[in-house]
Length: 429
Ligand code: SF4
Image (cartoon, rainbow, N blue to C red; front, side, top):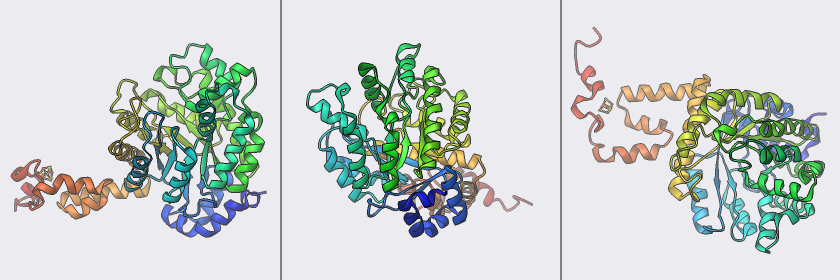
């Protein structure tokens, strides 16, 4: 039976949006349906998110970019987060994740869903853990029923995709905490679940209760973003037993999801040295049956706080070339503080650059054509075209402003190489 027959909410969303999606992705509707049914592509679109413009993620759709925003207990300014939401949208992100962990999480999520026409993702475990932590209780006391209730509540609110760390097993948690890892567990959701399992001497409730999660997800076409709670948090930890143990389970869970009519993505690393990025991506893709892969970076070095969006974009470009489908941005604030509005813009741009670099290297027509058009515009000193073709048109306008009356730019002035050759009557003869 096809996924479209199993998941009525998805079938309805596809019916409504397939023509727009096919046009935007330059794909046949049949290719999109085949990709979704084969589990290599997902449509992020919960019908309860009333104003959502659905987005396709996965092969052979174009690479997408996500921006994480949200409050923290130390920086909790909801108005500022709403400005960040708009900043991320204006900068060209394809999706947004609300990772709030400070303040009234339910009200923040509700407002973001109202204001965000892009698919919105969350990590439901944060809202559950916040209730326990704010009440002075140990997250190891979390009642699994609270987690399932929160997932259902957020699905009804309209959250389009959710990170659920269902693949984190007790064995994996033991590998990560008891072995040679330098950084141990760096995922917030992963660390809460690991604490719960190790203290209660029980298996991950999101794994044992996976069928219940599938049931909720199918009813509302929530895409499960199967979280990498054991992702490497340092280059030297990449590719260890803990990471691969979780990846293998994620592959099995994605298969079960597909059989149940639920769309699944796989979350990936994390910190990975540049020479290991390609092997990691190809390995994860193989073990997870080609499901859409959503990576955080990957960060290629560990010593660039303040510039981690650059370290991440380097890894992201290589990852896209190796088959990654979805890049989660990193901002200059990574590992330091909550991103500012400017950081959000810089993070989205860095990931979009990585996506363009990777897709141009893959020879994807939309990326190659954009490169060629920009080169031609540059040669012609056609600033209007350059601005249109630039990933950040506002930046072109701003940086050129001071000398916009000149044909050349202020880098070389009268030494402009293009003009020099163009004005030489014997040139080209
Ligand atoms: S002035 Fe120099 S940098 Fe500017 S367009 Fe001409 S050659 Fe390029």
